[in-house]
Length: 191
Ligand SMILES: CC(C)(COP(=O)(O)OP(=O)(O)OC[C@H]1O[C@@H](n2cnc3c(N)ncnc32)[C@H](O)[C@@H]1OP(=O)(O)O)[C@@H](O)C(=O)NCCC(=O)NCCS
Image (cartoon, rainbow, N blue to C red; front, side):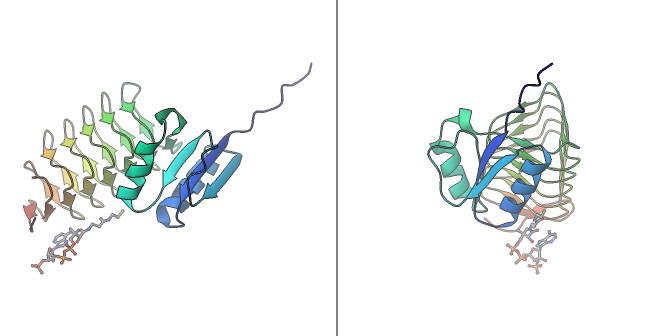
């Protein structure tokens, strides 16, 4: 019996040597990309791409500039992603992170290790979840939301676009756009 040659799994990571690039390279290797290259500028020939640039506005611009079919998601093998969740493109899901049932995750979301996007969440594009952040069920975020490590967001809360939730905050009410909230219960510290 002749064995079919194993197809090389190829991926180009566009990165800047920051922590996000290093995490993406590590994760891509872990999930079996054998033909992996990391470059600093977009290569128009690459068929499978992941943008891992620290500056999230630049990252967003690049993500939105290419055909979404070229973009892949990097999901850690120990993450738990519900079969009914829908993930768009260029999303990273870290070790032991959770994406619950019926959650919708827009493009460019970075979900760090041990964080939870619970059931029925609606996560806006380019949102960042720090390590261990918990978004309980039915939480919605606008685009470019930043949730610090270990923060917890009560079920049903909406976080406005471009808003930051500080490390360890407990957000129990809706958060406005373009604001920063810290503490337990979280309060706004300026716009
Ligand atoms: C919320 C945050 C963005 C504020 O940063 P900043 O605008 O530089 O604010 P400052 O450090 O000047 O702090 C402003 C005030 O908020 C308080 N504060 C800041 N962050 C806080 C936090 N996470 N929890 C409680 N209070 C906080 C400060 O003590 C200060 O209070 P004061 O005016 O009474 O002295 C930042 O502190 C933070 O929590 N970043 C998230 C980092 C993170 O989790 N990254 C992900 C890692 S995986």
